[in-house]
Image (cartoon, rainbow, N blue to C red; front, side, top):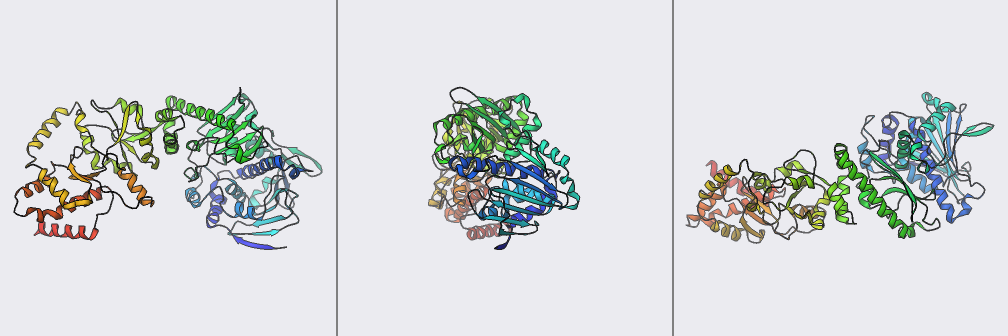
Length: 629
């Protein structure tokens, strides 16, 4: 016999401590997790046996069996499902494999109630250490000769060896229960837990009773095939916990049966909290596909679009062929029609929620809005509906605003829907590019999700109003009428400031262009500035400022192209520079450092470093010395 001791992945060591001591408020859910894993293993064998029927020869009845042993102080959870080989044991029980990363562990927190979700197979298995001092796993993968034994006390390492005691096929988990957890050896306790949490499992869960015939503890029927009137809210919730491997409450559910040319049943849930892997780069959907109650795959990218990847649940088709490979099924025309119908149904439910329950919909948008907006960019025929569902923060409103709300508040003369993109809404509100819009009471939408850099250029407009970034091109503020309550006052103020603007600024513009050269694309007077002296904007048709910064950060752009420097002719600094230039006598040479100070100031306002930090520091020191002297 070969035996090898391995260390848990670093994240697992911390996870084990959290799971064993803080993750669940009720430790009885350990059994739910082990039964769910066993059910998944049976589902996978059922599918594999379609193409390899020899895998179930001699033992075709799939089942899960609970065996309490009061004398040994152990509880055994066994299944005759797909089983695992050595590599799968290490992947599933030694690391947070498919179900997680270090980010998931960091999100767990240290107190009960901090966590509203658990991961997939790995994390669920570790729940066993809430009730057990040590855990043994005996397993043999279907179709393979070698069996394996895994054992650990959950304190940093595990041991793997080959084993003749492994079942002929499947997995047997032996929990050596803690002294204060021996109540899980009582049949009545096991019955209660299974009927509470696992009644919906489609595989029989049986309680071994010595010489007597095993007792089946669950209904052992696919929950989604039952009439809705026969399913309680608690049963729906427990099915969600099972299918999503989650511990939170679902936000909403859709249970339906489509009949006609294509027949299928769906039981879908929107989680109540954001799954930790929502922004995984692979953007995988998590809805399980069944055909005639036979599990096919939980990785079917053609079943729902990526922007609905927060959905959890199942779809069971009557029309898809069972004997088709997972790769070929992705392109099956029946699946394409199911996807289209599912998408419309889910969006319809979201529209209903947004209209009837705006407060709870706001919570949904907090969790999943950034993902749903990806559909605006993907464009699969649902763009108009998604635009109506979209919600945004803005410069003039608290909470979330819809595009319809925004349009209803547009000022006379305003044609565009104005936006500004960045990472932090509070920082965006202080952006100098917003000053002119704020002065005229024009609302600007704050776009803070990465996808916000892409969809506006694809969507182009909403109800004939184009989307327009305030950091690009001309502001067109002169076409928008001042807010009625302060219009006359502002108009008088603007006239007075125009009269005091001093000498013609054309000389200053020419001076700045000459001094800065190719460091800027152009220098021009600004409509958008009312308080700041300068700002940078992208020329119409050029890449937006924030997008350019994002691409450069991710090494997708080697250099950011020069931008337009806008100056506020009414600002005291600009007026003084204009006046100094008008004096002649070589003033331009003496004022050249100010040109670079203005550009560096504009760059700093955009969150960028000065062009030459050392030169910037020197100019600032010289200016301070001159002022103080």
